[in-house]
Length: 140
Image (cartoon, rainbow, N blue to C red):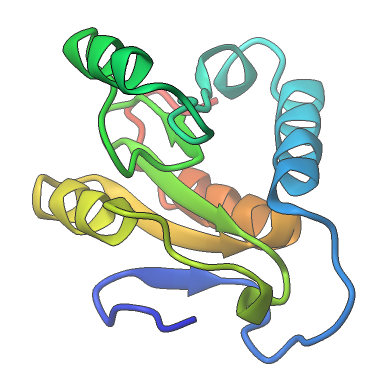
C-alpha cells in the first residue's frame, strides 16, 4: 500500500504479519476512546458507513441522502476536525477503496487534521497527537 506524502501515517509501517481486520481494529479504537473520554470525544467520534455491497437503487438513494464516496473510518468534529482512515496494522493487507485518498487530501486542503492509523494503536496514537497539540479551544 502506498501512502501520499501529504497524509501523515501513525503506527509501524514496517510491521508485517498476522493482525486483526480493519473492522476489529475500529471496534477496539472506539471502545477505548469511549471508555477513556466518555463525556467528550467519545460522545462525538463517528464512523460513517459507506462501504459494503448495495444495489444500484440503494447506492443512488444513499448518495442523494449525503453519503460521500471515500469518507474515512474515524471523524471527530471539532474546531480542527480529526479525520483518520484506519488500515490494518500490516498495511500490505489493506487496500485503498475508491475515493479514500481523494477525500483525505480534500479534507487536508480545508484544514482538517488528516491521517492514516495503522491498527487501533496507530489510530489512537494519532488521536493523542491531535488532542495534545491543542487543536481544540477548550480541551479538557
